[in-house]
Image 1 (spheres, rainbow, N blue to C red):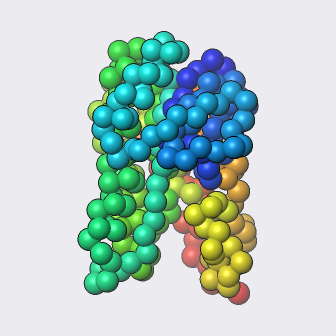
Image 2: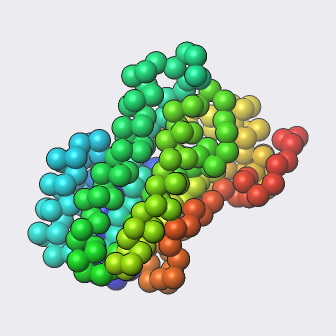
Length: 242
């Protein structure tokens, strides 16, 4: 990744920050775009404020990155939110907000970088989906729907951008210790969920970040259209939590 320029949305915390750290450690110049600035950005990373649901702000940020660095080699779409709610009781506002950030935000980021990448004949996009986009989950309708749609979007974008040399893949994390899962970490339901992973534990953000760095790098140059579960085996087999 040496001297490659990568934009990471949601890059100020959780999986986005861990991805930025892995990329910077590999020599990339990383722009971490988020609503709130992190105090823990590693060397090689810079912060830019961004609401990914805004087409105008997203396009302006990508233009600024290209103007400053002359190129954009990679995109990681890690910005995401979750709202608990089932079909009958979830508010329409929560449904639309989750889709706007998780799905439309991913599309807008990909669209903003697609043209510059196509013109250079190279580039790599990695979206952060979820095992909840691969499998059903009660009381989490909006999040599951948005992440399932992101996985399908990746397949379509890989088909569309592949002839121009641009690769598009997704990663579906399992239960990862992040600020979004803090409320579960010490509860019995969180411990039971972790034990359903074949490795019998929750994952670390760095373990997802390493997978992101792999898919962005030239080492994975013949991989596109793939959804890679980084889930400790959760999606491979169903086990009873004991």
